[in-house]
Length: 116
Length: 115
Image (cartoon, rainbow over the protein chains, first blue to last red):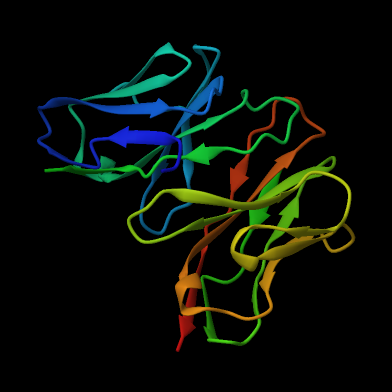
C-alpha cells in the first residue's frame, strides 16, 4: 500500500483507441505528477498539478491529456498514441508542488502501457 | 542548470558484503538529495533524503547515504547486503537555489546481490 493508487496496472491499446489512466492519492497531498519511464531512459516528468492547477507541462505531445478534478485524483487521457509511447506511466504526489521545499514525492505502482 | 549522475549502470555485490551505489550532482545553490528504490514491476519507493543537518542520513531497510559537499556526492551505502536488496536505485536532486527548479532523477543503477 503506497498511498498512491494507479489503475489499470496494465493496458494494451491500439493506435486509434482512446483510454485513460487513473491515479488517486490518499495522503492528503496537494500536488500530483505524471512521469514516464521507458527502458534505458531517465525518468521523464510529464505534468505537474499543484492545488488542481497545472504548473508544468514538459513539452508533452497533445495525444496525452491530463485532468485533475481535485487534489486527490489525476487522470491521463490517451488518444491516437504511437508504439513508442509504450512505457510505464508513474503517478506521484507530494505535499505541495515543486516549490522551495524538500517535500518527498511518493509514487504509485505504475501503469504499464503497450501501444500496438 | 542542475544535473545528477549515476556513473554505474550496474553494481554487483556478494551477500553480506558492504555495498555502495554512487551519485554525483551539480547545482547552482544548495541541494536537496533523494534516493529511491524500484523493485521489478513496481513504482519507486522513497528510501531517504538529505535536506539539511547531519551529512550522514539513515533511511529504510538499513540504507544510509552521506552528503559530501566538496565532492558533490551523495552515495548510497549499506554495511551488509541482502539478496532482497537487488533492485533499481535512483538518485534525485533539487536545487534549492532556484525556486523554479524541478526534482531531477538519475538514470538509475541496477544493484545485483548474489547469494
